[in-house]
Length: 129
Image (tube, rainbow, N blue to C red):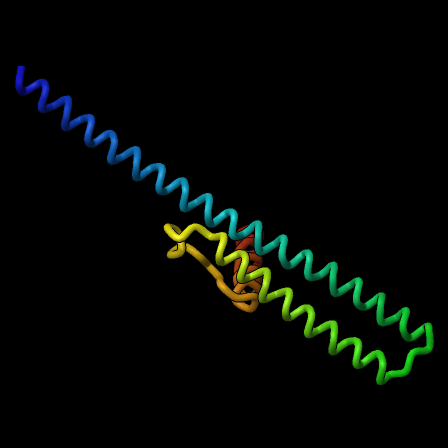
């Protein structure tokens, strides 16, 4: 009888440990997938913003604004974009669960761009095979 109880307890403990490991693995995969989607969203938004700014500069040229005025506006816009990048990444890093910081692929805007470029290259290699 004692043997059955020991086997049951041992089986229960092994089951709990394996369940924990499976849950941990699923969570890490989920965090990596979320990172991919966040990076894509951030960069697509950045591209939309850049396209909008190009239209703004064309409109300024058509309105016969001076080249100095357009250059100054470009500088101001770039300073604002840099500030937005830093804010986005600060919020992203602060929102990332502390427990899973070791799986973070990027912490700065430049690292995120490199991450997306690498993922894109890997996906292209995978689809070309």
